[in-house]
Amino acid sequence: PGKNLNFNFSKPPTLFFSSTISNPYITAGLTIYINYHKLKCPSILYHPLSRLSVSHNDLALQLRIRHNNYLSQVDLRNLSKVSTDISRFKAGHVQTQMFAVYVLCGAQQKDAVRLTLEQIDVVRRMCTEYQEFELVTSLQGIDKGKIACLISIEGGHSIDSSLPALRMFYQLGVRSMGLTHSCNTPWAESSSTFYPVYKRENNSLTSFGKVVVEEMNRLGMIVDLSHTSWNTSFAVLSHSKAPVIFSHSSSYSICNHSRNVPDSLLLELKKNQGLIMVNLHNTFVSCRDEANISHVADHFDYIKKLIGAESIGIGGDYEGATSFPHGLEDVSKYPALIQELLRRNWTENELAGVLRHNFLRVFEQVERVSERIHLYDENSSNLPSEVQIPFEEAHNPCRLVLRRPDPRSLPSDQSSGSEGGLPGLLILATVLVLSRIFLIE
Image 1 (cartoon, rainbow, N blue to C red):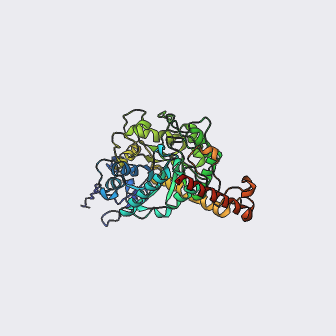
Image 2 (cartoon, rainbow, N blue to C red):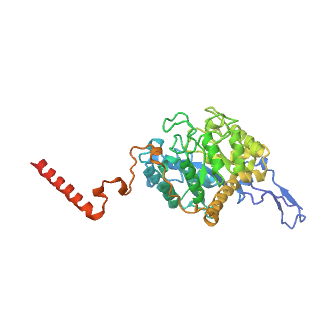
Image 3 (spheres, one colour):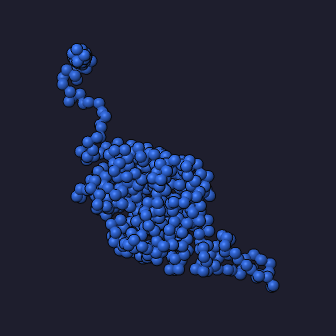
């Protein structure tokens, strides 16, 4: 009696969902229910289990373009010309961010592997030099009170059709890879129709592409189908032993862009227990240059109705895409999207999944599949695959094959051992010396 209870929601509230007040002036057992719809900042975001896990951000690409990867020249706590920095991550309640490692399709068959290594290096340095970040490679590394950094390769051209390169990237911390970007690889087909590289009919997923998926399953690397063609996506969904993700794609039924996912694929994704993480780029959301938060929420609503909220996550695509909806201009604006979904009667459990738990579930299942392959597989697939892409499929005239010559293919005087080989070498040396003398003269 005579006591006024004042709740300050300008700071993170200490009551979540429902909480019993402990106060000598109030009857024990009185319960307060927070009306989230009226809060400017939804309190679900302050729940320790509901911080955001976002699957795609191209900050590393912007560091390459704008600063040539010179981290010493920038302050990642406050960047003015991009949509991402540490302060805005905190404002957006982002706790786990998958940073994309991307190199241009023009580097395919040239220096894509080198460029990919350089981009991995900049993400690793970024996430170790700033105390707000924590570079993680497993599910257990995420809950440490910092912004967890995961590394994802955006485009299978980065491995140059090499399983050893894929494995070495894993050793460097890569935990996800998109099979294509805007160009085909020799073993998988892109969703892009305008890029001429490797645009062959019925490319889909070749036998070597299936081995790539198998090796990713064995390693515990998440298969990402954003940017792949529908045929490739269907093939992967029928072949992968682990859940897969579309890391930054939206619903084709809402916006019929080739980068979005049709209902038939979404239904297969549900069977796979995978995840579609909604892209926020205007063109993929509204099929126009302009969009708003309502357009984004329409994708969430449609996908939830079709395959359930447990199959949805947040894809972002900041720093890679060029335009975003009004009210979602940068990574600090995620709470506005959550507020809109709350207004549309999404439940707390559904949102907790979308914000965080769905992605962590997929990550955990991918790790478990890897463990199961290593422990229980009877077909020796627990060992690193030694499959190589057929030379004729690589379509790379610059590709060098290093191997000992087959003795059966050599002339008899060169394949008969040391006795027969020595005279041949002496003759060759003599010819070279004489040629040198004549050239000098």
